[in-house]
Length: 192
Image 1 (cartoon, rainbow, N blue to C red):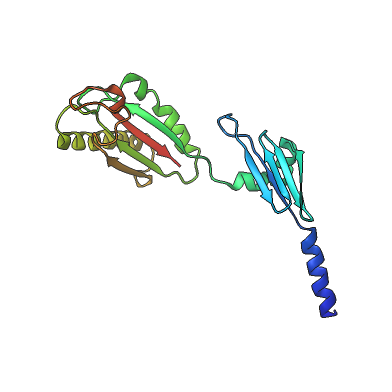
Image 2: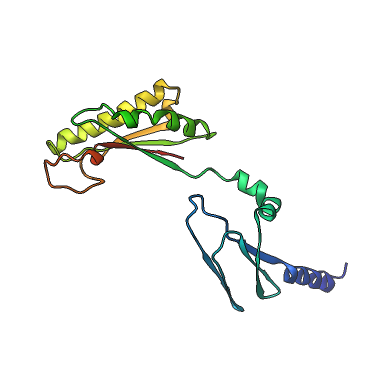
């Protein structure tokens, strides 16, 4: 084939290429948006499935839908990792005993871990500001370890879990020293 004609064909095909942006609905249902800009202008996408395609140097906006997204991108979207999920478990004062409401969350936690082919789990313990800082460091680690042991007892592989204690350094609710704050006596679990 003639080299100049082959180059011309490649350039023409590249000129026909298009780029498409589709705004997917947010997982939590909250509104979102994106602005797509290029040298020829901009398109604001602020509704679920709003889309724009850039072809031949210009942007053209349109309203896509779930069926089109599934047809075009379904395989790609199914290959993406699941979004991380978090849980916060609360404890009775001074020890590693979960509140009844928090203990009831273990079925949901186990379900979310099982739904992931290769789950990574971070378990981080915290305390309120009652007691000495060194004792709270130890208590926060003990709480995290207790949650890890309970998850392991329910079949979650220990090697998938990392454990840390933060003591009183990262309060959910800032307080003065020696203030008993139930929301600070917690373990945060992140599953990804």
